[in-house]
Amino acid sequence: MKSVFFISLILSLVVGFVIGAVLGVQVVEVYVEKIPKDTMYTFIVNNVGLLGSLSSFLALVFAIFLYVGWKEQQKNILLIEHHKKLLESVAKLGSTFRLHILSGAFRKRRINSVF
Image (cartoon, rainbow, N blue to C red; front, side):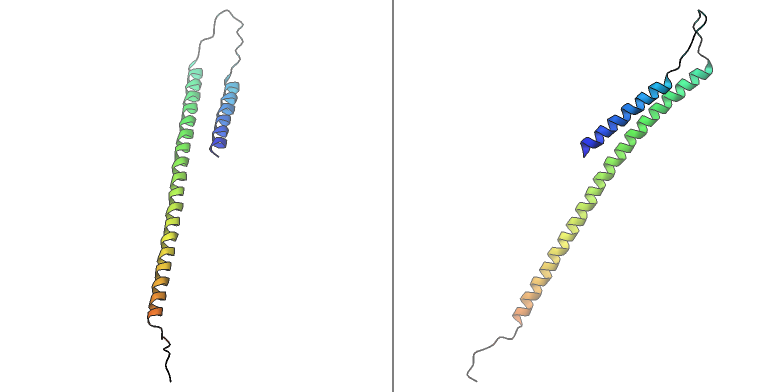
């Protein structure tokens, strides 16, 4: 199960990277000998894209951390429920055994008599 999770995680990261790389490529055709200067708009767009990529990666790490914690908590809850049922069964067996002993102690015994 863990291998499927990690394979799907890696596959989604690779697909996201490829889509981001394809969409992020800008074709610039230069008709003059000078290289065009970056404007403030391209600077802002590049930084926002970088910030978005970083925040989505951090959100993914946070989601994985929360999922692992939740899964561990669910296992602990199931273990506690199992222990509770086990203790209830032991208590029920103990009370049944006590009832059996007490009912056997006060049962009228047949005495072989000559009457």
